[in-house]
Amino acid sequence: MKKSQSDMALAEYEKRPWLKWYSEGVPADLEIPEKNVIEMLDEGVKKWGKKTAMIFYGNKIKHKEIHEKSLRFATALHDLGVKKGDMVAILLPNCPQFPIAYYAILRLGATATTISPLYTPREIAHQLKDSGAKIIIVLDLLYENVERIWDEVGLKYASVTSIAEYMGSRGRFFSRARAKTLQAEMSTRSEVLQFQDLNKKYPPNPPKVEISPDDLAALPYTGGTTGWPKGAMLTHRNIVSVQEQVWHAWPGLEEGKEVGLAILPFYHIYGQSVILLGGALRGGSGVVFPRPDMDEIIDSIEKYGITMFYGVPTLYKYLADHPKIKRVNLKKVKHFVCGADTLHEETRRDWERETGREIMEGYGLTETTAVISTNPLTRNRPGTLGVPLPNTYVAIAHMEKNEFLPPGEEGELVVSGPQVLQGYWKKPEANKNSFFEAGGRRYFRTGDVAWMDEEGYFHFVERTKDVIKYKGLQVFPHEIEDILYHHPKIKEAAVIGVPDKDVGERVKAIVVLEREYRGKVTEKEIMNYCEGKLAHYKIPKIIEFRGEIPKTDVMKVDHKRLRAEIFKLEEK
Image 1 (cartoon, rainbow, N blue to C red):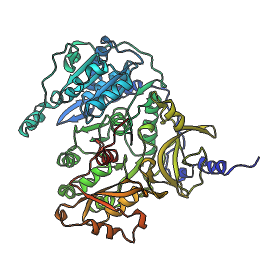
Image 2: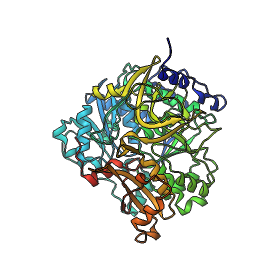
Image 3: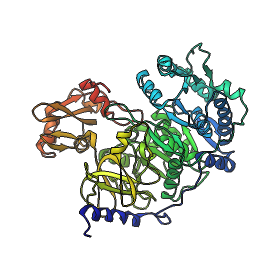
Image 4: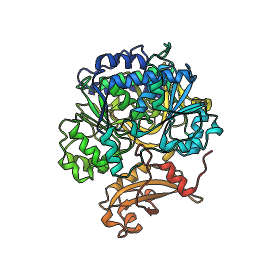
């Protein structure tokens, strides 16, 4: 029987043309251990228990200390009624309490659902109700938001902790000197329990629980472009798989010796899977930041001998603009990695000019346990998403049909691999639309427009939900933002579509000017700059100047918030 064009296109992707660019020794496929996350953690503690796991405001904490405290906390949670299959929420910034709570939850066979510290009470309530979590571990400074929705969501217990508890005397001194609040007054509810009291009260001997690699481990929520975020069901196998895939894709990393900067939030899958667990399972150390501080980040690179730097485009932009970056010694850093958002060419160029170092881009989603692809160490191609990890099949599909498009054509990026989520929590319709079977594999639709070149490298075009429709034509904000970033007077830019009854949507640009040019640049100047660089219908017809562009807590441009602010959209 004659093959269809879709079948022939799929056959081209199945050949995995990217394999020839893998660094020496990187296999096409790995044997993923039949283990759960806790088994991997316990093995790691036996090897590297005496090594430093975290450096928190100068306070060094060993792997075995995190392990012992997580055992105690698991015993406490069990006594509070947590059992296999339950959901437990974590509402914490980056701090030692996060892994202590996270590992304790997983050890009981329960699932950790992590919540953004920037969430409003309404958003916290949605995640607690949707996930079914009845116990929450929360920072004292954030507890007020939980108290306001306690009865609405039917919480049973809250375990409250403070940043100050693990800072050490030096960290507390400097925080007080800077007049930063370290602790908040707490509720008198008997169901509100102090984190440290529980750790002191209970012994480090929780019950043994049989945990399958296919049991649910984490339920992070994806940031929806419109509507409410959805819970992504990630199993122990998903998490273990991505650890093996990333580690083997970057030969040259050494177990027990790597030191990373833990700037990106642990609640987010990038910080959680790549940075937190990547360090814990391989005996690495992390310099932990509850919030980004550019001066302290730059100082820490030399002070602690950072070997791995994980960032997002905005972070690289801020650092490249910082006067201290030229003076810091970056020689020990093996890799500067970037993901989570589009790295504009201008940001890359500024970084390389100031530091002399390349950035390695990768790509992934919450739904893929953080990583799908990365640039090979020996063949970094700037401006691409790199090539898929071992065990990973990536292709380009038709936006509306379960059919494949040939290499070189733009379409929706789809992926099949052991790191892909099991499905969305309690969202059967979303699951029906997000997965399809082809060639004996289960493919997930990422919602991103991309294409693959003749060498097997993938190129990002746009999020499907961000595409602007002008008289039936597709306009990609990313393309316009790239042009605006090249303007010498523009520091940042974001592009969205504004509803228009005559043309569908008009292009609007939100622009942040360099400080010395603020108040000196007109809308017309920006439009004229775009002439000749963009088709007429892509040129922004509405320009808004701002002092800053709203970001998510992973420092991505918050397009959803921009739309909500401008059009006053209501979440449904």
